[in-house]
Length: 235
Image 1 (spheres, helix red, strand yellow):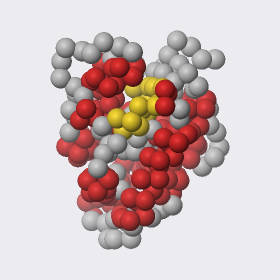
Image 2 (cartoon, rainbow, N blue to C red; image 1 turned 120 degrees about the horizontal axis):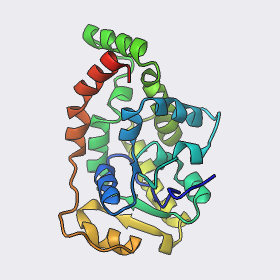
Image 3 (spheres, rainbow, N blue to C red; image 1 turned 90 degrees about the horizontal axis):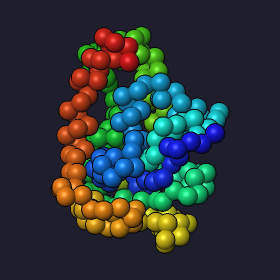
C-alpha cells in the first residue's frame, strides 16, 4: 500500500548530469528523502534488490522506494518509463549536460570498472575484492547489478564506444521529451539554479545558494572509507 511518502519527483537524467546536486536540492525543498545511487552504496542490501529488478525477477517499486518521495540518478533513471507510469502523479525532471563533457565524466567514474574489464587487476585490488565479497556479499554483487540495470540495459554493454554512448544519451533526451507531457516535465541544467526547479515544483525559492556537489570528488573521495567500512563492519 502506498503511504504518505509516495513518489513525487522522478529523475530521468543519466548519472553524472548533476544528479547529486539535484538530490540535495530536492531534500532541501521538502521532496526527500531522495533516492540516489549513493543510497544503494550506503545500504548494500539494496544492491540485491536492484539485481532482482535488472535480472527480471521482480519490479516491486513500492517496496523498493518505500519511505522515499523522490528518486534521481541510476539505477532508477534507467527505469524512468516504468516509474512514470507507476507513479502517474509524480513530476519528471530530466537533468542535462553538454554531451561531450558528460561522457568524459562518466567514463572516468561510473564506467571506469566496466572499461577496465579484461585488464590485469593489481594484487592489492584482488585482495580487497575478496575481503569485501566475504564480509559484504550483497555489495559484492554491485558490478553485476550495475551491468544488469545500466551498462547492458541502457548501453548494450558498449560503454567503451564513445559515439555509441553519445548517441544513446542524445536519443534518451529525445525520448523523454517525446514521452512526458510538457506540464509534467522539466528539462533542467543544475547551473540554472533554484528558480526553474522551484517554479516547476510550486515551492518558494530558498534564501541560500543552490547545492553544488562536486560529484567526481565525492565519487572518489568516499571510496577508501566505504571499502574499509565494508571490510570491518560488513555493511
